[in-house]
Image 1 (cartoon, rainbow, N blue to C red):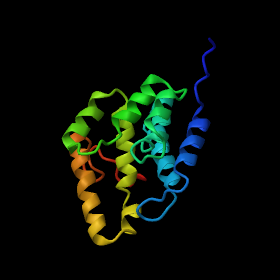
Image 2 (cartoon, helix red, strand yellow; image 1 turned 90 degrees about the vertical axis):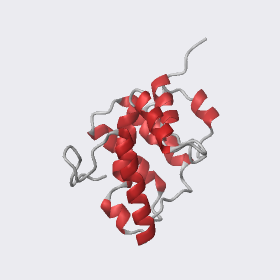
Image 3 (tube, rainbow, N blue to C red; image 1 turned 180 degrees about the vertical axis):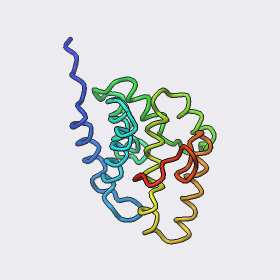
Image 4 (cartoon, rainbow, N blue to C red; image 1 turned 45 degrees about the horizontal axis):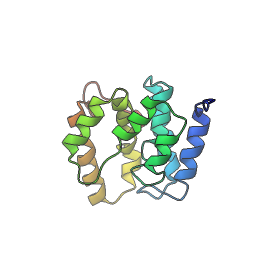
Length: 163
């Protein structure tokens, strides 16, 4: 039986954009902008093709944009699928359990780092109301700490980088 060729990054990006086409972020921007920024953040941090594909799909299952069955059956590497599932938050899951799964999955930390960096971008946060901005800033800082990642303003962080 012939094997299906793996999806290219262009095909993965197109699938992710289509899956999230009606979704906007907290600032009202098209959600695909976030996906593209995370994928680019993974690339800039030295991520490989599996990680970049996972970055495009990192919120697809969590946001019900694509069913988990689609992910299981998609012509993607096992590693890409494992990373997507690792960064997919589960209902009722503690931040500690989530962080432990990310840390235990090869390649997932880089994807989550790029996601947190973009989510923490001061320009993105600035358009939110003060209560939401404070809540999200604290949430992202806590997750960075659980993952052992330096913050944007700490040594080893990414000052001035598009987050």
